[in-house]
Image (cartoon, rainbow, N blue to C red; front, side, top):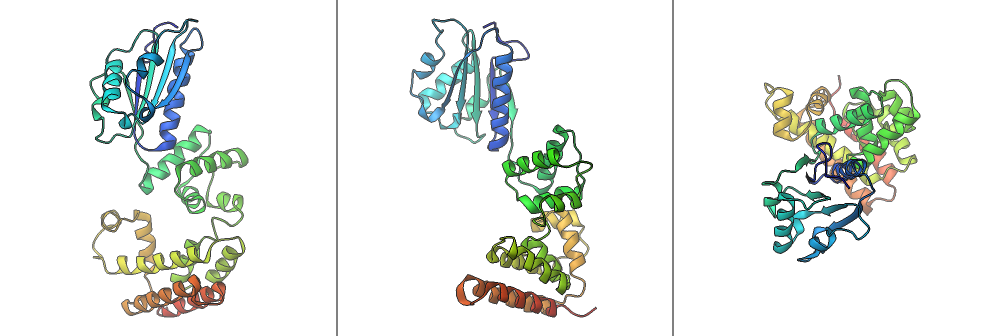
Length: 322
């Protein structure tokens, strides 16, 4: 195996705790090292916690059959003191014909492995914020040569949830199975009502006073397997959002209020629209309705579906006319 070229560094340290992104970075580094090798390298993929002092020297020792060594050490923060010292030494001066790929959560433990070496660092920070998830999905569609508008991205989040692996899989499926710009309508048709009939959509229609639509979405949600407990939770979140945004200073912009309340700005804008027709007293009554249906759905009532239909009717009635 020839010495690693500039395109394939002798050492790569992948930092972060976003599992999907870390795994992709490891795969890319391994593929890069393999492509730069004249012969397939001897690959070792190990967890740092499983290594003992001296194991690294054995793993990276020259092979009797020639060729190089590609060593992947996962979760380097879990290495013992002695193993961490050996890793640091090999990072500083990788043995000939050895390519090192380390992953590290980025925390304080064994943090010295993240500095003081000439290798490449790849950051894979956690994707937690609403905007970051939208950016992630945009990049997934771009990789597939497709485009999605904001409405489509938000609908996909509603349909799939926030798990990055599931979002990546959903983006891949939509990119392969649909045509044109991926918008809200495309997502709704693809998931056959899943995106439209979630508990959150039921809650939105209820707090907006749209009784017929709320009941129709409720029946569809229940028919497609959405848990009554999840619908109750969505109703609680919807009513709670009315109270939180309704009592906040009206002079604050959506971005500032979103940061204060821990909501995405688009959610603040939506709740402000939904607040039309609501009074403080009405929101308080709706809270009481949600508390009652929560108990009924969790065992006190004979029919969760009936309890939810009645609760939605009462929530709409809590809203002032007009």
